[in-house]
Length: 534
Image (cartoon, rainbow, N blue to C red; front, side, top):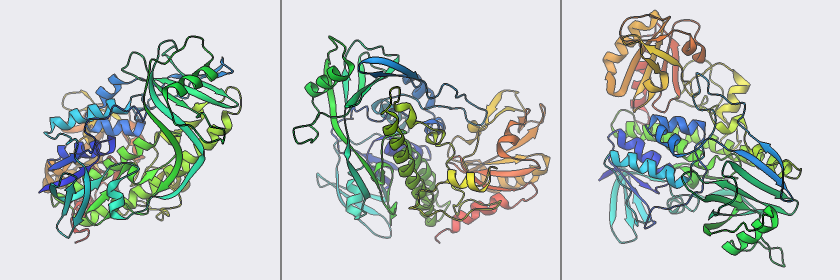
């Protein structure tokens, strides 16, 4: 019996598999496609997903394989009218090292994650299709299309908007489809346009957008309003149709498509489920939420679902937490899904309004919120210390970001844990807090000398495998074992004015904030996890 069976080997499933495998959890990941898809689809990770990928140890490869966002060149009637750089004023900050999304085709990100997964001895099982399953109190039995069975303690469906897992569970993907909002998409090859720009030919009767695909010589993402028949119905995408659309809007003589593949028709859906878990079967990514592409949050929300779930599954499977910990996955991520539907719908509407005017374009889809660095779980039952807001309505679209703005700008339990540059007291070498957090453990930060005893006793009780403790000392000098916050950037990021303890979860969210002298705060928190659902 494997511990976790993951259905679907897209970015969500691969992120979850990598996170579980590095924790020593027996995991299998199956994919019904007979070969790895070459689809570009999502255009790349946003800043919060880059932090997740850094924790998994692949962000340098991701950054090397992709490019920073390109200048958007906008045209009207074939003539350039404006350039836009949505992230021109953005800069990395001490608490947030990634300030913009990164252009990278989905197939390349999947390659990188599959390679990391293989480092842990796990490979995607291609041509392996789930057709049904049964579950009981001890596990799940999955039946495959070829008649084979896989027994697992848990099954996670990461199999997309048409999820077989979700359908077998009988969980509806409720919402609406905006039939009037249709786009044709595909990967095309052509020479001619400057690959330093994301070209957007937008006219009153439609438009074409071409964005170069990093890592290719002549590959482009092609998006366009579709051709329509005499009844006004959209025509199916085709290479010839793409060429006609390009001729109509770009108006560049001799600009010919050499190839067009992975053609699809995209209709705007705004849908989500009302639960992420039924017994020992859980859902993540597009299987639980689909929404407008505006803001680029589809793949990113799935990656962040997986990062929230991975450590919880691992702790339950290893006996470090009770099965009730898995209830917090839905408690935390369902409101985020509702918020995602709201923000992407809002950004889509803003973009539709913007492109009516010359110079308007896709730059309006990006806002600070779409970086998802501000999302947190202040309402969560796992957030301990300081005053906690009421839990949001899972269908209201409220998120941790909205709650934080309304309640208190200070860092709170449930918030994303900020980064900060420090130094290792023993060697003087630079070290970032994110480097201390990376891996499958909790991290206990003790700010000031008053936290020394609590750090020492908690570390002795729980050991380095489950918890790592660091004293964050003020100033440029300190004894070995301390982390030096010589410029006060860590204290500032965490809003620490007096000595204090901060426990950081394995997914880099704050678990608790406690007085420095509370020697039992972190240990009691970890002990409570063991009793959840017992």
